[in-house]
Length: 427
Image (cartoon, rainbow, N blue to C red):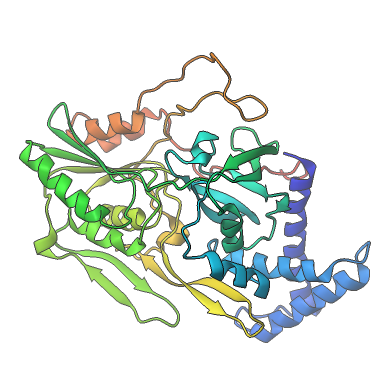
């Protein structure tokens, strides 16, 4: 990890500690619901920084960083844009601009990769879920609004954009130039595997993908499928509400999800018997890039005991977001309601934890220090271990207990992000 990145994280933690100490000054802590008390603490911290920091700080940057840090602490998909940024965002939000194929969130103050669209410039550069974008066009993403980062990555087709990348596999910063392109959402994959196993890879819930899934599922039934493996890996795009009818294809009763927020009425979504299409054995596959509508469907089917889930914990992105314009011409994009699983858990806060947690085989190419594939490197294990274990589970060749007891590839509890490591002073 480069020293600048490490000290940024340490500095952020120090600010949090300062807030807590000042909030409890004179032995009197600010209560959690005392908004004005917390504002007084915030104001005092700003004053101390202005008067006592080692050098005179740029208070505009300090304030902007505090606002974005506040938003990230409650919502990794939130953004604050000043008036100029919001005007630029409005101009291009609905325009048919090219991009680099990245689905993004905020993590550790930086822009983080949720998923990469197949065939996109980002995939060709071997960018992966969990990588952090340190800069875009030589502008640091630290405290950058998420929506503005997405805006900077868009542009005319065949134009280049330079990014600084912190890879999971190599946390030293790397500079990459990506050529923007229009990348369509991936197509649905459906096929009948040996043993009468129907395989459905739902790669997006955008557009009419759920209707396509319904048609493909009906085709697999006609072909004689006795089991279904529903693969939701790298399914992170599309209207999140489409996860509800996707789940309903496999449910004839029970609750699918609940949507609720502070200012929005609670909505409960129950399965409709007429929409149920498959009642046979079902196993779902998830990974770190499973997000949004796919998570809603996976959580519903798992909590209703309708399916076992195999793979990695999903990303955590299931909410309704709203753009709220500010008096100064700026805007805040904020989650105003969250989807909850039938078990009552916020999917955005918890993701979906599989019944059998197994890491996916790394079949990507070996990379050199510059992030480029190493020519003639030894081939990796190309076996799709999650699909193999899902087939064994859905057909009854193995059980959840047996898979769990194997231990191979099991995900350690409380796994730490490889880039954000502990500092040497920490135990």
